[in-house]
Image 1 (cartoon, helix red, strand yellow):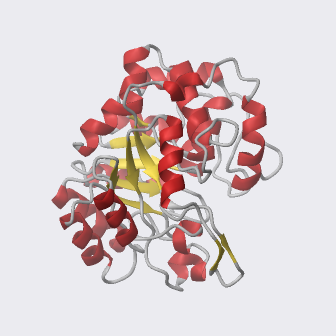
Image 2 (cartoon, one colour):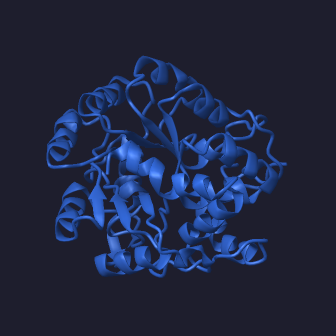
Length: 328
């Protein structure tokens, strides 16, 4: 059953830690010595902005990010940059700059990766519909970026601007990660199968609220119900995209990924079993501890261990799938 009231990302994350404290599995997974690849983290994450979308409060530092990742047991982290700061419809006149926050851009991710090679790898990004977006992204692909994204802008998923990025991903053999959120980012989820067919050599990674809400066959896209609750009926659009298209993968990060499996444990076990080769661990949390009480990434690691059909499947999701997809 879906939630009868809108639940914001902030409200959801505020309640997740206390709700999961009673979950029937342990959070001791963060102590493992086995390698973990986190495909979704950000630099300068978690600062505060004013009504003009300018940062007015410090974000998490690079040192705190490193401590956070170590706290979760992560050994390799993929940094996803924001696009540049612009005022236009695709950034909702600035609201969506900094990936709707204070996240920094390509150069910061590049420099942190160069400072700590092996510990970090990085993606390339730009506001999708800027005329020079492909050129900016290509510059950083040539400098070693292994992914395009996080694409989080108010554009149609099949727009010419997006297709130019898909073509770039094809040319450079890198995946593209997309934030799906009905009413805000990457419009046309129900049409996306057309892009999956048109670009069969491009590996697409789905992420965020609309992506994970659509694991349920009965879900109706609704910007006021981005974190649906209750039992899940298998066969939703996300489930079908993963089953029907070899070039579709899933990013488990953030509160939306956590909620997708916390809400129905029986469904979670079946989902992990049938899609174990397509799932990628990501955290996308802005805390500084990496401890389950405050960290959705740590809690997701625990869910991966709890719901995977066996240890080899868990190792795929936490490490092997990403190592293969990104050729790390």
